[in-house]
Figure 1 (spheres, rainbow, N blue to C red):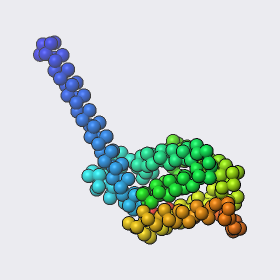
Figure 2 (figure 1 turned 135 degrees about the vertical axis):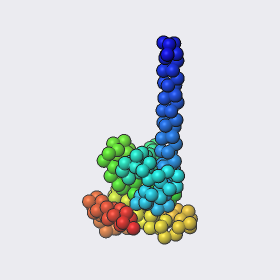
Figure 3 (figure 1 turned 60 degrees about the vertical axis):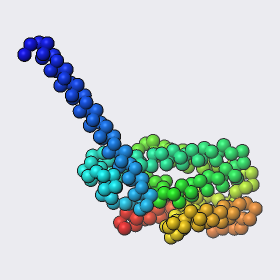
Figure 4 (figure 1 turned 135 degrees about the horizontal axis):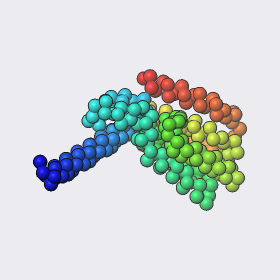
Length: 233
């Protein structure tokens, strides 16, 4: 083979390799997108403990492909809920910017509970630890700190009852989750009504003495038990 032909053949092999590599990258991205879309659908319906095989089936790929893209369940969860976490932190930013902290507080609780009604996996994401995803953890921690500041401001203007604790939001989400799970397709109507009741109970003007709130440790333990029950169902 002449040098000219050898160079042409090498260039053809390189072009073919580039095309094959591009095709593989496109296939991998398509599989990833399909898995994330399927996982969001499955987790919304069944919670974070849903079978991984069901996610793969709905995505139209094999279970081996799923685990190549997402070696651990938490990897799939954080990829699936990245946009949701951004919406969650954006909600607290909007609430914090409200010139009336009490209205900001109410709007935030309504928004978070509406997100929860739309997606069953959302509550679990908020209360689950993801040590291998620093961004996810940082965003959730930032939202929690901003919510604590919003609580203080809403109390300072006399809107929020003085004994409200950050852990009370977790209880509200757990109560809302119970209504959502029990009412199914009627949750779109029942959840907002429950939230309205809860927010009226949070108003300082109607506050009556309450038992002390649960400790953060007690709430964490309760949430861990809840996760374990869901993942063994």
